[in-house]
Length: 97
Image 1 (spheres, rainbow, N blue to C red):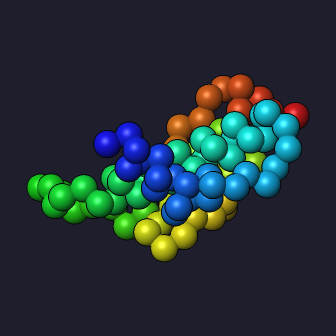
Image 2: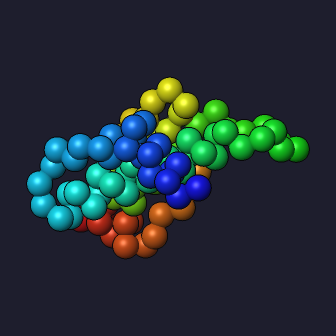
């Protein structure tokens, strides 16, 4: 089972060749691949009593309010009003500064 997940990460989510330098950047690249793979697997779950979401939103917890919007077709970093995220008081302090 793990071999299948690793092969999928390499073949479908860009983990075969990492083109960034530095341990922190490489780790971030790999973790976004794992996140995208997880979202892909969640979208493939069998039909449940409630329908699968059209997209998954992942809050980046930065002061600009950015989030990653993941759909079966693509993913993008965006921001906008009306997204139901709770932010910590430290983020509110950073926005005010």
